[in-house]
Image 1: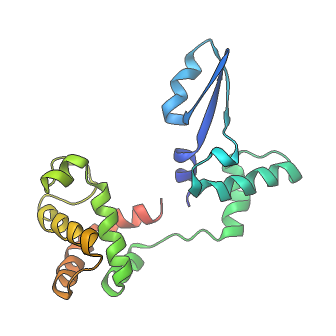
Image 2 (image 1 turned 120 degrees about the vertical axis):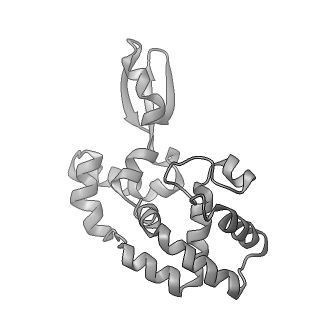
Amino acid sequence: MTLETIMKDTLWVAKMQGYRTVGTYDEIKHLGESEECRDFDTLCTDGQPNHLKPFYKAYYEHCRTKGWMTIQDYYHEVWEKEHKVKTWAPEEIKSLIQTNDTVLYRALKRLYAEQTDDEQFREHTVERNGRGFNKVDADFLTSVSKFLNSRGFLTEKQKVATRRKLIKYTAQLTKLANA
């Protein structure tokens, strides 16, 4: 888990005069411009998304026992060292796609999830946003993704073709793996 993911997915509380509002920082930051806003605070550990709960449990315990730190300082000075955060290299991703069916399936599903709902429905790329499949591969990879989702496996022929196509998505997959 990267600091970018933590900061993007953390839920905050905007303490307003007479009420509170919860959301990601991007969702509620506009409230800070209001005279009714007293301040912002992170939501308690139990209220955070499941993937952030271990981080916040450790963060709050560290702050309680060793003194207050910003989230960023805690992440860099404590969390990274204790959890040996793995950073994936493009060559590793490429190699795993070529040799590991589980990684191939996860990569295909992850790229398919990056397609917009409209692109998934139409089975081709509509937006040029650098996410999901490109225009050339969208028809085939969407079809294979749907096959995988419904059957739980790919045929040997599908795996060979999918591996060959997914290589060009190594940069995008590396970014997603490190998010």
